[in-house]
Length: 381
Length: 90
Image (cartoon, rainbow over all chains, first blue to last red; front, side, top):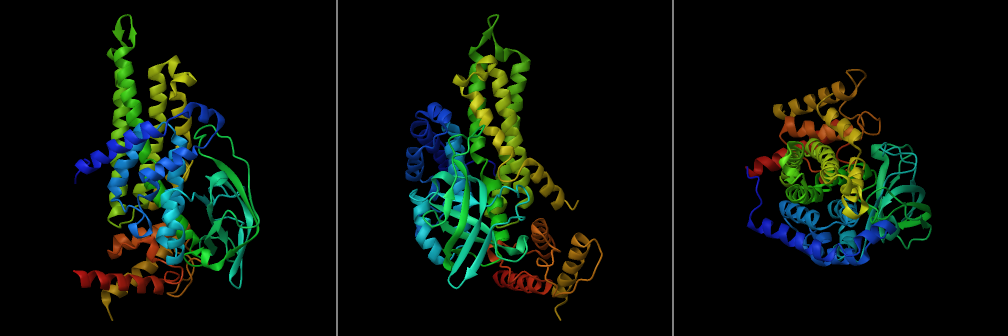
């Protein structure tokens, strides 16, 4: 058991931090106010290789070891303040790219994965519906087969990357009734007739990650765009969610590390009655708690990643890691804000922005309530 | 008759009956588990965890299709081929 990065991974983390700090933060405050997605940032991420991390070289990827992926994403979290952009990259990689890589035909992989890796294609996962929410398998979108085509009808919402996506992974009912084994997954290009992409939904946080409703009206999709086989949508979605739960909060480890470093620095220089505030135990203990939460989250995520790397079941551990890390992340942002006091509440400090971004982590990839349900169910309750 | 495999089939049936059917109703080796609603999405994850813990076989989701995982007999066949593969490597 080794809990430390090796030299190569330390270098990856440092390189990712330096890249993010120099290339991804320009005009962030303005873009955040305007809910503006950074196309330049997306392209820069692709040039750096973020979208290509898990894909084999034969499809244009880098095939990084999973702990190299972790080191890279931690570094990105440390250096990048545009959490929305990184959320978009994560949604693209874990919600769309992974599903094509693991379940798509060779034709789909050859046609789309190179574009997914070099950033010329943006992917979006379209599962949630206006009336399904956490009951993901109660969806009403249908896909009816007619010779070499499926005709898709229905509406999806909270589609991350929706307004900028080139390709949607759409989950639709192919059986007569809803349910786990009656759902199939389709790759649908945005240019397909009958797709209507709604306006960018304004959010509390992650404002630079675009999100919208997407409607499919008699969309004819070639049968070869079926991902996996008919009826496998539930399995594919479960698999994507397990990947998301394992990896989507890795960058938040870097964000927590950044906030702790910032708080330590502030606690040393900010004085009250000539004494640095760090000398007050109410402040120093709070920072100690922040560090403790970060390290506990780190170990839980590393365990889930190790299970996945070793091809073992990671459902329980990925849910525990996701739940714990999201709560630690939110609390760390609240504690950073408290440490900075009134200044932390000011928009200018950008700490309130970190907190607004963090809140979403208790909702995406399955809410905290759903994670607790999964954990309880896997404990046999 | 391979007793180890037969034990696996029986313990799988017992697990499904007790966990998802609360000991009620009839289940045979060819009952469709998903189409009948006996196993749902959460049940699917529980089933994978059970197979890894009790049969020593870790199934990757990408190896599963609805055609090779619909019934106890199909799961049993899949486990059998995975165990054979594992023994061959050992």
